[in-house]
Amino acid sequence: MMATACDLVSLVIILMSFWIHEGHADARTDVVSRSCGKVNATRPEIVVQRFSSMSNEMKRGMVSDSKFAISESGEAPDDKVYMLSQCMEDLSNIECESCFYQVYHLLQHCLPSNGGRVYLDGCFARFENYNFFKEVNGPADSKRCGNDIEQEGEFKELVERVTMKMVKKAPGNSGFAEGQENTNGLSAYGIATCWKTLDKQSCAACLLHAAASSLSCLPSIEGRALHAGCYLRYSYYAFANSRCRKNDNSGTYHALLYISYAIYVLAVCFLAIGVGFYLGKVTYKRKLRRNMQKGVEVDLSALHGTLRFLQFKYSTIDKATESFSETNKLGRGGYGEVFKTWKHFQAKTVSEMIDNSMEKSEENVEEMERVVWVGLLCTQESASQRPTMKNVVEILKQKEMRLPTPSKPPFTDECMELSDSIHRRYSSLSNKFI
Image (cartoon, rainbow, N blue to C red; front, side):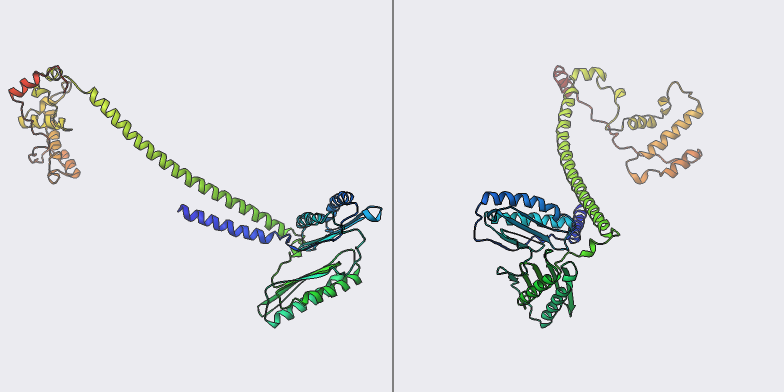
């Protein structure tokens, strides 16, 4: 039962973890490309200092709704620094901050070079010693193609269709577009984005070159175009973070997300309680078992001490029982009362058993004798000879009913009398313990 409950809670936690992971989109910090300039800065210490201060300043823009920042610093040509960073529009502010933190640390490893650029799946950053903000294409443009391929010709058509739709949509949509095409169980997904320093014409020109570059990856199931002014990607799976869940003004997404967190926490708590209960139960049983074993040892020790306490001199017992007089014998085992009663019943002296404080009228004596008679019937050795409770009630109510003669109760056989020789032998041991 305990194992089943734990398995169920574990399954709930696994499913909830998966659901939360799906609900909270990925910041997509996988490195696509990193390249550094081949020439070091003339005054590297100044460039490093300015790079750090500019990055801190740009962070404010990256965590805002624009998810974009540019900065420039320096007067002399040999210590001038220009920086640009931008996240994909499908990332949330928190996801963009995480992506920028990663891309910043990768980019700073290019120092003391005079330039560098880093493409992550979710964001981009670049610095140079010249103004590159309006660049559309350049000699450092590249592409990245997936290793696996899709032989179906329909997949190629889907990729081409989704790519051209994004190229047309992005320039008039703040430089960003998502796309999806499906047919016959095949799907193609894509993202296209331009850096926000480009105008519509420059964005369109950059994406046209990027589209041609990425489509040359076919029949690969994934392709990326990394250009100076834009980025374009297609894939066989939905990698983009849905923008609708961040534009949902009703707050449904956040409500569901908080509920999922609450359920996740409750599942963890139930699992912890279950494990604690199980461990506590096991510990309690072990402790109880030890105490029982210890208790047996204690009881045996106490019994041994009690037996020593009950040891008497033979002379003391002989004197206390008036030399083992029959009148002082209580009976055998737990049947002392039956032993005495049977003797009086046989001798027809039951009246002697009546307390002296009671009136010994003829009626009382007869009633006492009848009660003793019934009692002896109920203590016969054979259970089949004993009357039932119903019969006992009838016997006590109907005084005229004739009663059968009871047989001798068990444990009433008299002990063999000690011979004179044995009696003398034990008398000689009066100063010893039994």
